[in-house]
Amino acid sequence: MIEIIFLGTSAMAPTKDRNHTSIFIRRFKEYMLFDCGEGTQRQLKIAGISPQKISNIYLSHWHGDHMLGLPGLVQTLGANNYDKTLQIYGPNHTKEKIKTLMETFPFEASIDYEAKDVKEGKVKETEDFVIKAFKLKHSAPCFGYRLEEKDKLRIIKKKLKEKGIEEGPHLNKLLKEKEILYKGKKITTSDICKVKKGKKIGYIADTGLCDNVYKIAKDVDLLICESTYAEEHREKAEEYLHLTGKQAAEIAKASNVKNLILTHFSQRYLNTKEILKEAKEVFENTKAAYDFMKVKVK
Ligand SMILES: [Zn+2]
Ligand SMILES: [Zn+2]
Image (cartoon, rainbow, N blue to C red):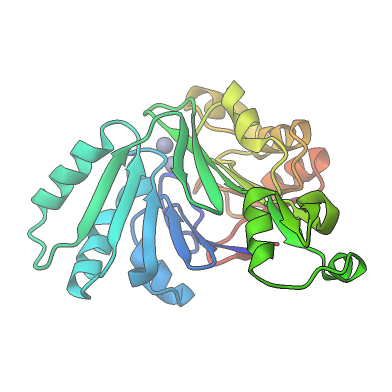
């Protein structure tokens, strides 16, 4: 199960109701942030998430609305004896920039961290999932991300009974080696297992339309996509390299997406009604994010 909480859903300027961009994603014990706009640590507090549990931060780009929350968060982690090594990923000399940032602020207590420059392709891999980065088309070097759970083999107990196979460590061996000899007979995973498909989530951060948005979106269970503008400001979207809600919906429709959530709304709109309406006309399974919106992908 993957849990997502939108900690901030505004674009360049925060509003009374919307904080700068940050998306919290939890996959079992793995606590991650995608972007860390100003005020993210307070949003975490309101959402009831302990910042101490965050282990990985993926920055899309270095525009302030996506990263200004980092120094504050790091200060709080240091003051609370953070016991992990914070992994920070991002484009455009992130490693160097984070080093400068850590030296700029006289933090009373430092934290262990590792900053990494993101290149296109696999950014992180664990036994259970991978995170891939895709270059976007924005006024600063920018990446979108895709979290892909790996497919898992599950043993069907009924099949074990049918085939007279007892439970035990030989089953772990079977899952690992895909085939074992059991009481002189060959057993393969296809005899007694089914495949549990891994879930996929895409995050399209600030961008104009480009080929990679479709690569991020392809076949995902949930697509989170920036929708800074409504169609009436399409020209502005194109000029400043952002998307409209309708364009986000067209990407979802063309990419076999299950659900679409729009976010990163310009402060010029009193609400997201128009953007959402335009998107839903193209792709029905669309929602507009709001701060502290919770979603589960299972
Ligand atoms: Zn932005
Ligand atoms: Zn930006």
